[in-house]
Amino acid sequence: MSKIEEKLKMKRLYVVSVLLVVIGVSLSFTTYNELPNDKKKFVVVLDAGHGGHDSGNRGNGYSEKDIALNVVLRIGEALEKDDRFKVVYTRKTDKFIELHERGKIANDAKADLFVSVHCNSHRSQALGTETFVLGLHANDENFNVAKNENSVILLEDNYQANYDGFDPNSPESIIGLTLMQEEYLEQSLTLASFVQNRFKKRLARKSRGVKQAGFVVLHQTYMPSVLIELGFLTNDQEGRYLNSEKGQQEMAASIITSVVDYKESLDAIYNFPETKDFLSSDAAQDSGEKELYEGVTFKVQIAAGSSDIELKPYNFKGLDELSKEHSDAIYKYYFGQTSDYKEIQELKNIAVDKGYTSSFVVAFKNEKMIPLAEALKVNTSSN
Image 1 (cartoon, rainbow, N blue to C red):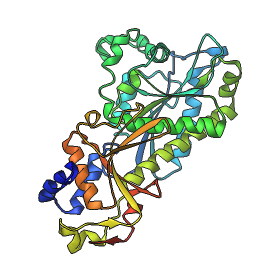
Image 2 (image 1 turned 90 degrees about the vertical axis):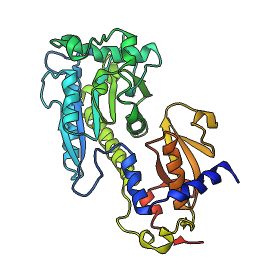
Image 3 (image 1 turned 60 degrees about the vertical axis):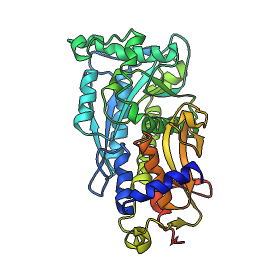
């Protein structure tokens, strides 16, 4: 008998009804602030960088604060026409908003997503888009981008008290920023990847990739958050494009589509069928019987991130039967593999017991991920 089979045998002594387990899946994943329903709107906070006496960078004479605001207003206008979304702005006019206030606006709104829009600058003709999530800067270049955006706090009154002595010029200060956003890293990386892929594939913009760095404005938020650098105003060609109505409309359209795709990817995880015959069946109540879904493979997603980790039990708290996939700059790590829905729920419980408290079940058909709700519509067969 394998280690997994031994664990499953013990777990079956404590199996509760499938209905409670399904509810537990939703509660264990921390993207939404509450379970979604028809009345719950997906709250997106749009943050136009800089403003007022903080102009941002003025590469080639252009104004970062104005370009960021124009793009944000276009994004918001489109999302507001979609009944699924509620849009909150940190600013809708040329107004200076302190970084800690931007985070407070998002937190008070109980936002599901925070999107901050900026433009880059450099001493050379560097060009390209990049999207950041909060994390330790991997190199001096990432640190310098974060330092430039964080330096706005020096324009604020009483900034030392507001940011507990944070020094935007100190790499050591960044380390303390990353902890609060750690649980949202996977979701933030997912959105960032959507954004960069849209820029590259739909607009043929040069992509500088998804990156991690220590941005104060992202640290202040308690939800998945990204900071988008639309491009370099200091690049002659890119600056003209971003300062144009065409450029701003195209960049906004790509971000709009990315936000919608991100929400729909979450819906694929959250939206379970309201009722299922098997929930009340004798087989569902009998822990000794299986719930097989023909042609469907269930796995437990236990982690995701930008690092490629070797599939060894010592790297995953002793779990074996591991697999992974690499897509859109993100590695996703899975535990277990079965067509038995009851078995995958028990494997999920094992993962949770090991410390992977945000684990959730995913489904595959023909080696492609499908929404769990779709997988559960497949007729079951009991053995």
